[in-house]
Image: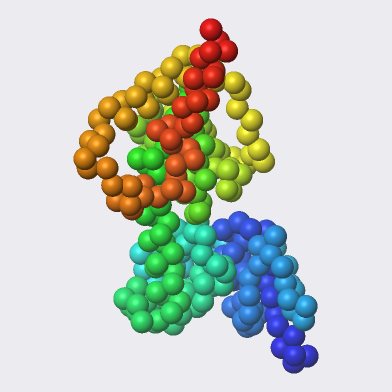
Length: 261
């Protein structure tokens, strides 16, 4: 900018809001040096400009992606917004501006830092989501299935269809502690809502017994001579262990049983 400050866009943190930032850039013929969500911290000399979310403008940008670039690029951008990559907004913004210039071949431009970083971020997201399809452990609370996860990326939209199809007749909730959101399924309908905190009730004895049985099964099928903790951590990293029934403190389950008795 002429006064030596950097133009920085701020927005409401939604995907539509980010698309409006792209629209604003082209409409006003300006390029922001950064795009910040509500909790972002601008620099001391940044000139911040808040971009209002306009659904019509967002839709125009979204619809333009498969026309001017490709359907694959549209999907990449949509998934990229769910990642935990640093400055994802700026990364997506730069990807779209480059895509509008070169078209569909952008998807194969892996030597470009922007394209490479976005594709790697989305790969990290989808790989983490794939792991959670196998690592999520549900518990029964008041006849509903409840699971708690702590992902790095916002995986709930990615895994929603998988669990809705798998437990189509069940009432269940998957709570994401990291992003303070919950995937709720009931009456064959799925929605993702924001929840600041979740306090679960005391475990029922039946659920505690199921956990003890699962832990016993886990230990029984293990082959001592093939015990390889390093290999286990490769396929089941320790950051997942906190919410896995297999690693739930057995002494706590035993104490619960004694108290019930």
